[in-house]
Structure formats: structure tokens, C-alpha cells
Image 1 (cartoon, rainbow, N blue to C red):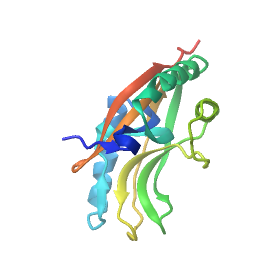
Image 2: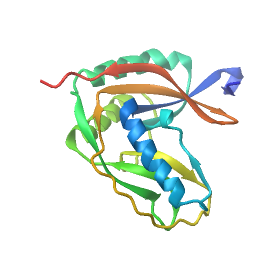
Image 3: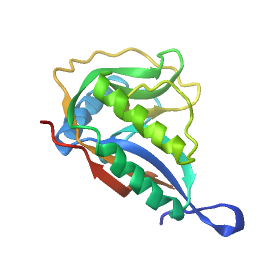
Length: 196
């Protein structure tokens, strides 16, 4: 059963965020590395993210209402119309924000102009339309596992090889918290321009 959140006067709130999805093949590659890490970290209290939930978060909106979705659809269309498909590369797999204070185990995405410009333009449009978005440094990543509070972490060894995916779609997801974990569903999506 999906859990609902209610705001003032019983209005249904939607927990939402913008993200770049990853391809199935890329997700399978990453999940193989995650399986390798789970063997190296058998005593770590980690909650592993299922491959179908892999994504690169661009903007977390928090709780929105259904009446906000048409404006967000318009923002999505405007943003994808001025950005082209580009290739993204995994730089490393690390503890985040650090091995000393681990909250997540993540696959870091290499910073590149096309990605940072897309994220910056999205934030600008959201703020222009009155949506609140936190000001924080953008560190593109894919969450692989979540650590418990005060979890102690240790190093690991991993041969990454070449891991690449395409930045070709911008998606507004709904995040519904369930007893078994977060469930993501698509609220709207836009396809970036083909590279010319």
C-alpha cells in the first residue's frame, strides 16, 4: 500500500524531485559493482538501493501539490528544449560525504559543462516559478547504499573500468515512502535534443 502525506486542510502532498534516469544496461553494470562491494563490506549496516531506483538527482522539491504539476511540466519542456543529449561517465565509487562521516555509498559522476549547465538552468527556472530549492553545491552521483547514523565505514578495492550512460531525459519523479523503501513513479518527463 502506498503511503500518502497530507498538508493543511487535508490536501494531498506529493514528495517530488527532478532527476536523470539511467539506462537498464548501465544500471546492471553498476549493480554488479554494488554486489561486489556488498561482499567486501559484509559487516557494514547498509541498506542497498535497488537498481530500478538508480538516478542522478538534479533538484529536490520536497512536498508539492497536484496543481503544481502543469507548471513543472512547462518547466521541463523549456529546459529540455535548450539542452542536448550528452555522455556521462562514472568517476569513482566512494563514501559520501566522506569515509569519516558516511551517509551514502555513491557512484560519483564526472563533472562536465553540459550536466552542470542543465542543472543550473533547471534550478533557475524553478526559482523563477516560485519553487523553493535549497542552495547547495551540486555533486552529481548515483546512490548505491545508505548507511545508518554513526555508521563506521572502511575502505574497499574496486576495478571500475569504463562506465558511461547518456544524459538524454529529464524526469520529475514522485517519491512514495513505503515500509519496504522508497517507490518512484514518473510525474512528467522530457527528452533532450538529439546531438547535432
